[in-house]
Length: 174
Image (tube, rainbow, N blue to C red; front, side):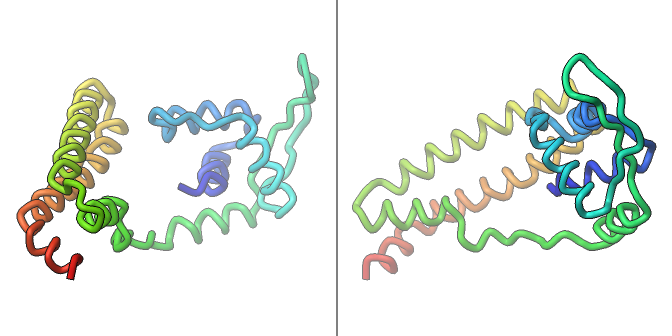
């Protein structure tokens, strides 16, 4: 995820302090991985330097002065360009799982055990995401669905690999 573009996009609704940007980010996009304050302020500093935001006001606080940031026209253009550009699909051609299976075969370890252990971990995470999805709002449901679909694809790959393990073993050992 592009943190800088996300923060810029959040600023389109109006000027905000870094603290408010972090809270809004965490509500909509944090999903178990909240943004660190340091990351927000480092990003805002870069955006300011690049002319994508400006300081709209400074207020004294209990610590450092609180800056209120506003998006510039260049920032709006940058967000618009980012939103209109499709994301590159990730085909996972160099999968860690594949590497582990091949290495297990090459080193005479049990690739079956590796696949079983991985399958159990995928199923555990799928159960956790399903519980979160049931208890969550629409945003949580959509994020969980995205993750669940990827995990389902991984499970299909694990099953297919298990079914082809003897053939793969003979190919990698020859």
